[in-house]
Image (tube, rainbow, N blue to C red; front, top):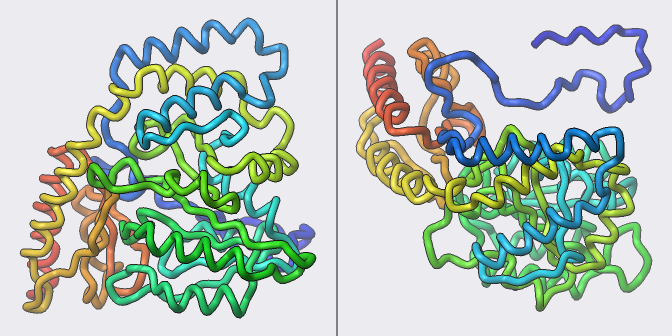
Length: 387
């Protein structure tokens, strides 16, 4: 999209030259670029959603429950089932996607003179939350295998005294999981340092973004299990990914009541519409159906990773980052990844140019889509190798 902003508009100086964030939305047969669950809701779920919306439609002349209490109760029941962690309503907060959750976190704890610290490569929206809230965004590099360099992060925490330490598990775009021992080390360190621009005795908030956590292998822990021991921990979740609900835009935060109350200060009044709340409640009533394909998508991820590792580029096997998500970062040595992306797109397959140079990311689709991806990538690599 071209920039059509007139020069005489008083756009903030720091936004001049910026373009809106977003992955390409193209009408192609195989879309494997935005990490969606590719399986549509079952007809019973669609019917339940329609019925719930029909029930609230006559009340749309009134504002919705601004505390979305019923939805928070439903989130609590889901988290108890999914992770074995029981939380009170006061420990949960919902919003329009985890994007809004993260923006509210930055609004509450960031701001002029404040810093947020992450580990690169990571989700490309984090710098934009920081920019939009006048928060300084800092990162430490991950190791070559994309695992967290814990020592580097702890040193940066002590040096920079951030208000927010933001870690992602599984990490986007790499799929890397965050070990609980590393997270505990970060949480313990955060209790010993101050926050630049804050009064004495204030400590950083540690936020773990678990947007893709349902795709982890069974038995792997979640940061939710540490909430009872660390009051400065906050865990972000979403219904967009494993829950097959990206179009509904529903995310939520689990944290101490104190953190939730801080976020409530900056939320817009009635930010979750009655329709959004009804839709989310209907989907949560059908958790089994919504998550029915998660195990198959895990299997697809593992099979695709194995297949990619047997492909070559300039005589060397492709690298594939270890992933606990529904996507794979692959390549590692592509000297013109944009050309590979374009050639795949010509064949009707849309993936993502993201992450470090030399890498591409593909998310898991239905079986027929993955077959077409494999076929197209084989053609493209062979063509470019012989040019």
